[in-house]
Image (cartoon, rainbow, N blue to C red):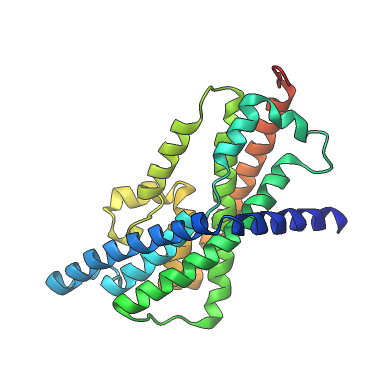
Length: 264
């Protein structure tokens, strides 16, 4: 319990540190609200002019879907650049003799910031969506299931990001890989629209990757909850989490063994 408590303390410190830069914190949420507003106009026009409905997704459902997917996309903490620099400069060596595991420390810090950003994004996004298209029917009993799926999605995002960051042990710059990952989330993650809107071939390809479980699965469950889909999504999230956690730990052990600190 003491070992677990120290990571909760790390998360709490990370959360408090984020509030110290309140203007920067709020600016990110303003950007989120602006994105929502733009797409509200798009989906509203489609809904009025063409009666756009695909697999139960009309303009109202698409706005709320986007609210959920963008809340995750912009609510996840950005730890990649810091981790990349720690690996490339050898500063990670100073973390090896600390009374914590480096990966778990980063995970706790990630969640401390993410919880705060997600809470604010949900409040702002819900206000924008309510003002634009009104409410959608949401069963409160399903919200716990949606939150579990969202928590697994954000943890999955962390391990994907950490795997890319740790590749800095072997490559000079990981920034291009993160740029590619963010763009892959746009398409295979279903950031702007659910898989039901996609062509069949693209939807099948997206569902075969872990990326759709980062954004699409929790957002779709929020808008259209289905127990069978929830059980399948959570099972696949756990499978991908196990595989990626194993990969991250393996990369970390291999990287630490070949660590060469220059001038440290």
